[in-house]
Amino acid sequence: MIELQALSKRHRSGDVETTALDAINLHIEAGEYLAITGPSGCGKSTLLGLLGLLDEPSSGRYLLEGQDVQALGARERAALRRGRIGFVFQSFNLVDDLSVRENVQLALRYGPLPEKAQRARVEEVLQRLGLAHRAGHHPSQLSGGQQQRVAIARAIAARPALLLADEPTGNLDSHHGHEVMQLLRELNQEGTTLVVVTHSAEHAALASRTVRLLDGRVLVDAVAEVAA
Image 1 (cartoon, rainbow, N blue to C red):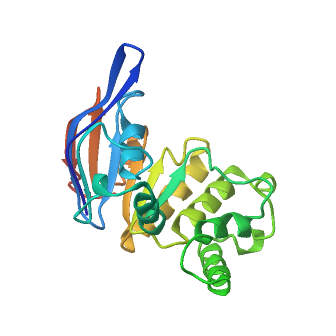
Image 2: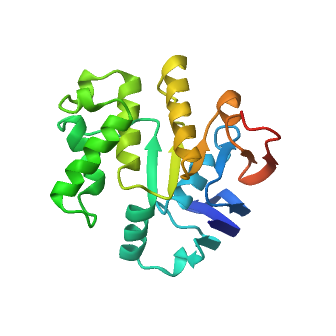
């Protein structure tokens, strides 16, 4: 599904250039569950941003389902991201003034579904995540675990082929964090390609494969003998 060829990302500030990712080569199969680990500042979130088309590499190639994404214009990249890629962030990124239902429907607003079909999809996703009874509530009325489930509902509402999660349990206690990781694993088992950035060895062990980064390079690329 994903092929990275010597992908690099450099940042320049004045005369100083910093390399965030250094010639990354990586292949991710459709339906795979990949954990990305490593110390702070090693390039994990930078890599996730490139995978999600939120940023552009300085050099190298990124093939998504055989398509060279660097050859696409900004609008084409946005359309591809909107239709194929879902995001789950540590900070939830919910809109406080909107209800749970409205927050989830945001993911469908600029897609091809008519309004009635959007509402039906939202209700389906909220039911799946055990949030139907909270549909009219606002984020401030929910627990951290519930807010993260709303964020996941929004991420999967458009049924993306690729789901990217950046420290999705970072703001949760251990109980709610476990619930979120089990939910992500279930989505992967249903066919969604899942890439999770995590500091947690326990959460990384849930993945079928782990890539460990150090100083912007792949230090370890290991397939789990038995997925937990």
